[in-house]
Length: 569
Image 1: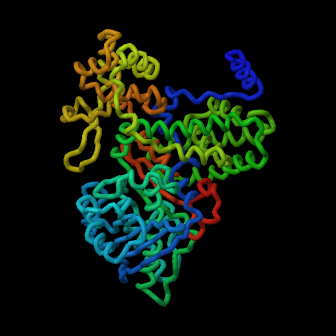
Image 2 (image 1 turned 90 degrees about the horizontal axis):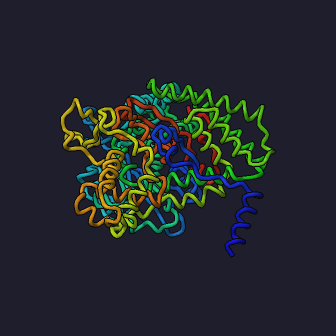
Image 3 (image 1 turned 180 degrees about the vertical axis):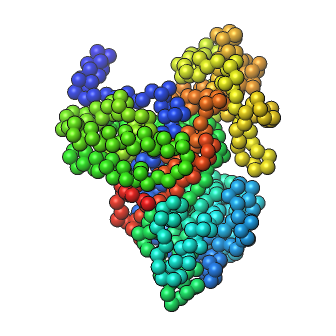
């Protein structure tokens, strides 16, 4: 039987090329993770695809002449209904802040499970504008708030009320009328716990309800600006052109608060990356690519060049990355149009190998994302694998031995184990929670106070500490006895047993090095959310725009899935 299996494997390898998944010790480096771009796996795009045949409706729109009041939007299919309830509020300019510690916002939102009754709206009217200090019920699924870009919003109202469309140059620079400052879910502040809804087919993908909320908020911003313009000048006002609406999204400023998430959710991170790597592997293993698929791929690459040139940023760091990306994408276009023949066997594998040899990391990952565009049959099954039942893997197998754990570290963390943490440069930074702003921050250990309050985000250092202790322990010592003497290392012992099963669960880099660029961690997560353009304002926070260029609600049942590669300026 064993002989037949071996013969079978040889037969497969002769007649079908097998591509290995990419090495986690390369892919999980921050410079590579910080070069990821949105793809068909991104939550924003999978949400649109899942809800394209749902009935969209504006159920309630009761705003006064200044745009303050209540609005309700819904998606419905058969007996299932999701309703966004919007509360637009009047606040003073000095009360407007995007900080987590803010207490007032231009608008507050909640996604309600089902059709809200009058008593639900009255209850939520008292609680939703309070956000964190309010209290929601299991009927509410997500919670958010947003502020106007006052300059843009007022400009658009003024122009529309006078019967003319707004200045496109201004809109291009900003890209949105509102920016969200947080989106919450999964049981926070009384919201429905994940277990209540996790088995619903339509929301099986990660963050799908959060994406729905942001998408419906986008439509509210268009309706509100049209309403205020019409009330200001009923005789002359015009509505915001639908093409302009389509090229506007919802803004967001993202800081270090997002970074701990990808450290604290290792199995979820693994599933995101593994699905992406599996998609690439399957595409590279396609022996014969159909003409329609190669044409779609090439079209997306060509179209994307115009989109890259429309990115707006003042960040020198990002400008260099954009310049390198643009140069290499143009080089790649020249290669596939003048030198490459898609009729050869395994063309995408050859393309990938060429990219690794000839282009920068940013370009490699950019083209990897575009490779997925022709292949719904590969991508759709993977989307359902991107969630994780994290608690299932939380327990530590205490019966395992020190020798086994040491072997795991040597196999899974080879680059981490060679870092010398006695050098100041390798432990210069530390993570902490700001007392005033209640947000994660990073500081210089040798210049600033507070390192005694360090958050457990220095995984590389702690793995090295664990390895040092394991080398001094008896090989046959069981983990429960080891932890009795080393309880401070429990968190990385758990991580080591997780990475044994989940190869992409760990950032293979030093998150407290003087060379760390934190926005690489932010970009990783935002690429899976579906952000198209990144505008770093420093190495610690950046601006993005969600749903810019996305189909409007009335277009969902028939839209171009490759809208992301069109020009959205």
